[in-house]
Length: 115
Image (cartoon, rainbow, N blue to C red; front, side):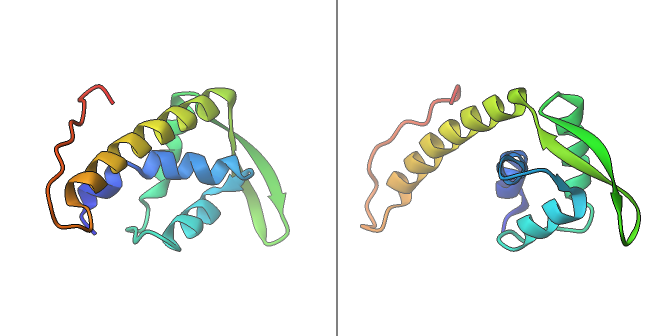
């Protein structure tokens, strides 16, 4: 898959995974890789960026299999961002679907740059 397609939605996908419950980095990466092919180490910079902008918080939890793990928790800011991103994505992907639709004909659709 084109890496540019992924770049635009990975933040939203990470937030969606964390909406289901707190998780540590490896589990987030594993959940994403079930549906999207990712390079090793792709998820950690995203998690750091989301923590820096207040979308997630972190905490350490002891592990039975080694050192404590850093868990990520979706904040209210992150939840708002996720809802806004999902709305924007649905509008954008719906417009693209209309353009490339199954019928094989072009249906004029306008994609706003503000969406």
